[in-house]
Length: 76
View 1 (tube, helix red, strand yellow):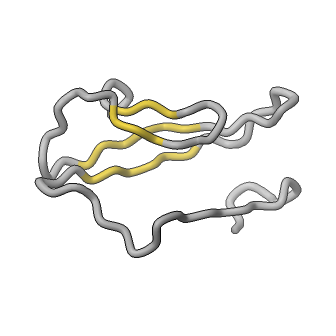
View 2 (spheres, helix red, strand yellow):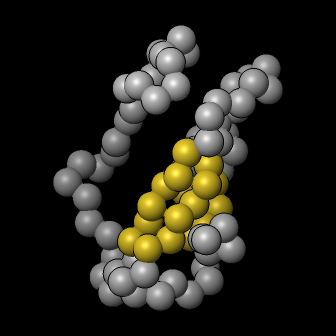
């Protein structure tokens, strides 16, 4: 699990740490599920987060993903 170590902003979907200590080299699995403005839920997804000794480094400053609303589950 990782629910106690991470929180998801309900508006933006941003995942942040809660401040609890993370174990280096441990993979945390976080279950997430998107909900649209009318309360309809998408299929659940698992986000894997690997904790390390150094802060994360990313190639891009932001990442964005768009999925058309009518995309069948399991397809990208």
